[in-house]
Length: 167
Image (cartoon, rainbow, N blue to C red; front, side, top):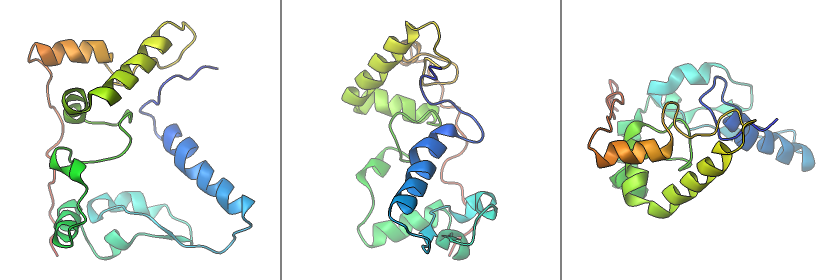
């Protein structure tokens, strides 16, 4: 089966295939049975942290740190990722969970990566058996480019950096 590009699904097969399974494989190949895995969910994501095994720790949840708290801490010790000057979240530039704002920013400021994404999308679009031939849930990258050029690309994302918790 040709799956194509990562899709927005629950649970996320991309996370499973690119993070969870390689980690499990590494542990098995190296005969590691005792380990502690630290996961960076923030306090505002604490619902994601309630499904954990005994080896997982969630220090940001434990310290009740939301994204704004983490941002302040990283800035205070000069460890802020320069991508946060424009993006509110970082990860793979080809993540299907990107916000509309992130698609816009990749298009405008990361032309090489956008071209790579577009080339992959166009090659999959020609394959009739491909389940998901595009990055965005509704639009192809060519359609997104047209909407951006026309000034009609909407940033309908939720409020960014909202935080009810402060440390």
